[in-house]
Length: 476
Image 1 (cartoon, rainbow, N blue to C red):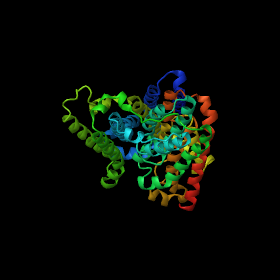
Image 2: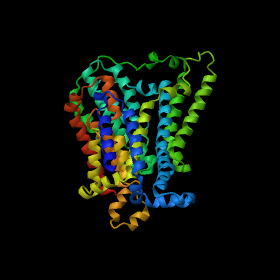
Image 3: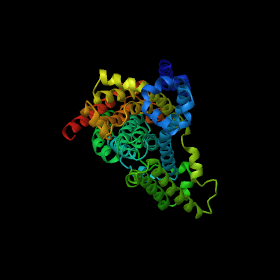
Image 4: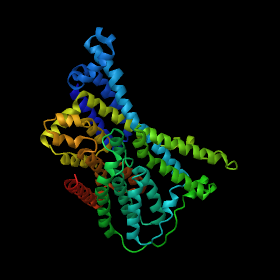
């Protein structure tokens, strides 16, 4: 059954990677894979539980004395249904609820023209200077917003500024690289860093200072190389006017749109502070921020009686705009990974990596390279499942405490994983959600990206990794 689970997961993974040629949405594939694996694991549980979850199983039986009269197989079934799957879905929902809150917040700011205050201040005509400005804005914006939303906003900007599609390809590719790098150094900048942060593998106070410089290097080295494709000045430059596409923006005052931007960004930035003060999970903080923004917009629209109700972009309308398919994909793939974890398959993989690779830097570089080919979400989810966060007690009891310290909270393994999984996806245009969206919006050719952009993305990835390794050897 373990072999069958492995083959089903690999088949599902392949179908997800080949989503576009197969014309099969990856969310459906992920949900099907995840549910099938849990069904198989339910039958395999009597084999797996005694070796993988023996302590948790014994504790469960002590809390349910009425199960003592049942057979071992029935006890295992109760343990899976009443403990393991509920524990799994609880951990997954922490991530999904946070993403829902963040997506609604970002969409609300964007729908009310909040990002115009950033984009309309781009006035340079020099193409190379514009490339640096776009890369810088993207890098820092994606550390607060998700890299997918940042990429869409910045693509809308360059469409207003640049007519030549080949030059837009260069700008669009740099946007992908800068967005992925910018999301890697912030706990709320990328889905993978959110997963690591929500589950306690990394913290804000340690992640930002350790990953900022490597991420910056990984973004700006490709910009240095890409400059050679751009020459001269733009023929004309004008402010980005997204109000042409949204009637409500014309009806709102400048201070109202600015207030929504400030409150929205402040709510996102407040989440780490909220977690530090209250010690509550991050999803509580993002829901609190969303509630504040929701209250503000409702009060604002109460004063706008002359605006027709159909034009008002209340949160109830914005909710319909968020990408539910992406959320279902995360649900399915995380369910699949958890089934492998409970079955003990991921433990076998981690033991193999420790035995044949044995170096945390090398393991993460492999994961980062793989993230350019397949989605980085299941890769990070798998790594989280393979290597539990080590406690001080575990380190003291270990025969190799120096190695195990790499897996404590904010250990080298988790920080470098955040960098490699986030930045590594830039090496191919299909290696990240931002890349896939930009590829679709600008019709970027896969082979052109592979030939022109991949070498500079690899150079940035390796340079940033080198900086992180050197940085940790000097300032451990």
